[in-house]
Amino acid sequence: MLLDYKKIDPELLAFLEKMPPLDITRDNIADVRTMLASRPQPASRVQVQETTDTVSTEDGDVGVCIYRKTSAENQPALLWIHGGGYVLGDAVEERARIFADKFDCTVVSVDYRLAPEHPFPAGPNDCLATLYWMEDESERLGINPKRIAIGGASAGAGMAAGVAMMSRDRGGPALTFQLLLYPMIDNLHATESGQFENHPIWNQGTSLNAWEMYLGGTPGADASPYAAASRADDLRGLPPTYICVGSEDLFRDESLEYARRLMAASVPCEISVFPGVFHGGEMFVPHAAVSRRMQESILAALGDAINKL
Image (cartoon, rainbow, N blue to C red; front, side, top):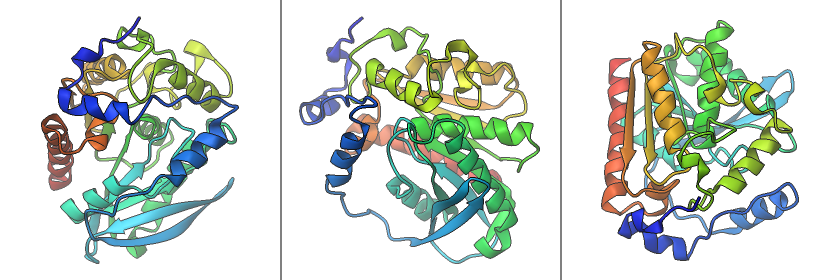
């Protein structure tokens, strides 16, 4: 099946002429990383305190970037997990800076291990270890250990969903909220939107390749729910959740179904679908009207959650 690009918001459509869909395989993943790393990065739109630290785990050290607006003590905190299809990206995140600045909270962004060199469960284990570290080091970090939320975008949101389940099931810190931006949670893409082969930026073929690298094969429906949250049988006891996705995103229907199942499990959940938006479109074309609405929705959801903590 082929997606009709006429459905894409006109303000976003022109960007696609400059950014073809990513084509990622095991053979070219190193080259793709090099290409993306070489692209110039715009200056940050906000000024916040930026420090780094190291989390010691059984598997080795994990780096984290810590963003704070002020040095106020006992702040709410957000464990932020970057996107990149489980195979790309790093902890230096503009969105994390924006959250810290907007809400005067501490945002800890994890430089978790990437597939295919480190398949599941390496990445979630790094993130869960960081969550425990945030609780254990809360006084030094200036955060309230009872006011920790979790979030991410794309694969980062998928990993956040899995880590929230891991923390629930293993008696970890009680998370107050999860912010899931167009989460990558279904390794099968067994939905209507998942059947289209030509989504912009992140298409079906690349996504399935990334899942194969992350899962170390193709376990199908037997994949761990900590890796692919759509595989979970029990969503009870998870924190209140916000999910957003674009109508022209490969992940649209898996996001909608996950939100439906969360609500059926008595988990408070807000779901927002933005018309004409492809995967990550609001970040690539931030000044488009629909992008501004999407960003405002994300900030409102996190702000409301933090104010309730």
